[in-house]
Image 1 (cartoon, rainbow, N blue to C red):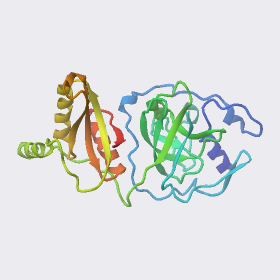
Image 2 (image 1 turned 135 degrees about the horizontal axis):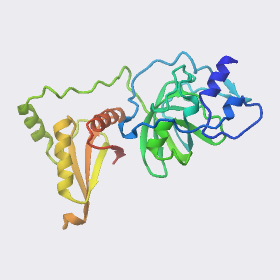
Image 3 (image 1 turned 180 degrees about the vertical axis):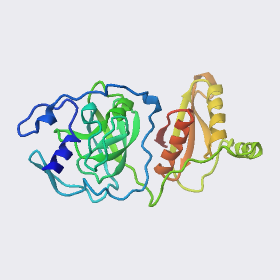
Image 4 (image 1 turned 135 degrees about the vertical axis):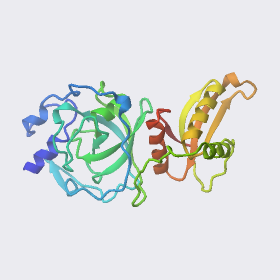
Length: 289
């Protein structure tokens, strides 16, 4: 019973409706944290290879009279539906995996994905994307497929609204892959110049067949796109190109997209995206072309 209460208390939906046979605590109003942090300083969860959590993966399990089954693998999982969020009421409490819930961590609750699983969540109403770690069970409200932390919902733009239609996609993580930020503090000016000259070429043939890119910015002025391209080239080891579309005879009628890639897989794109965000050079979108 104690474990059941932990499971329920860590997975309530935002402003849940009163229902029979529900612990009283489950129906108390939820809301944003009393002290709000700067959301621009909160980064996506960084996917990494982790063992299954000791808690929260028991299958089947029952909550509020309904039985749920945990997936054996998250590979290939993709689903669209309503997303919600949970906030201050559960701050500091244990999630189903026994990690304490932090409203400002990029985490989420899901009814059937293995714990932990890293997923990309897209708000289909504004196309904003985030990466979160699923470490909890829920939401146990009909028609909702994922419960995001307060910060995750805020970054997707539906914190005030409460719910939004989202797409949830599991991220395939290569075995034993972890992320270590690349140290650029000791690069010499000569090596920077050589690297920049190598990557400035408009067309770079990749050594693999991939169509995964990061779009860092889109500009009506070519000079602005070129300025961002130069900054990215000096900081990254990936190819940086400008993809222009529109009236080829007039650069002022074109849209100039600054893109990084291609990448061998989505995991690599996510890691580079985090580098770009940490250096305040943009909030990239993963695109397939």
